[in-house]
Length: 197
Image (tube, rainbow, N blue to C red; front, side, top):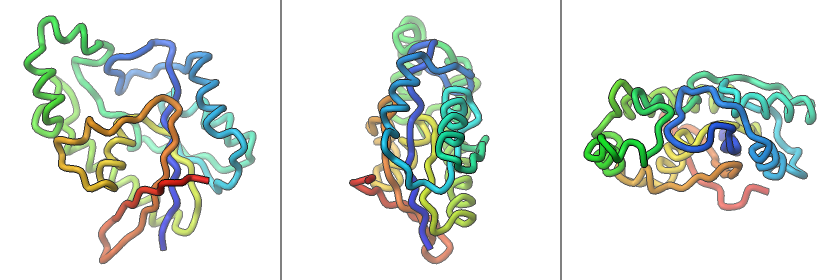
């Protein structure tokens, strides 16, 4: 049996851009508006799953209460930890770490930011969490509120992109994408759904 999974990226945060993986930023007023607009008129989900970070979980709690749905916080679906790059923009890193930044952009699996989480570790924790969710929630329509890195990873897997293509997947604030997940021969498969509603 499969799971219908809609993935919603959190909205803009009060801290703006840059590498913000483990940092626990709050949503800005614009971020709240982006998320409310993204789900306006939707009501077919059976549960909401969210990253525990505030930029996801605060809106998830509001929406779960509004729709009277169960809410689960999933620590393994939080963003990639960027280590020493946390809180810095690409422009700041270009000043004294341009070679390292370039290596990361070219092959995020081959280069880990100093003190950061290796992408292979990130991939393992995210896919394991999706496997558990697919097994536990088979047949349901679930909304996952999470981060760009998680969504890029899952969309890249669904699109069968090479690992170098991961950062080419674009996911804007408040964007919603649909997947269908399931198991074939005990292996997780992901299929992108073109139309969510």
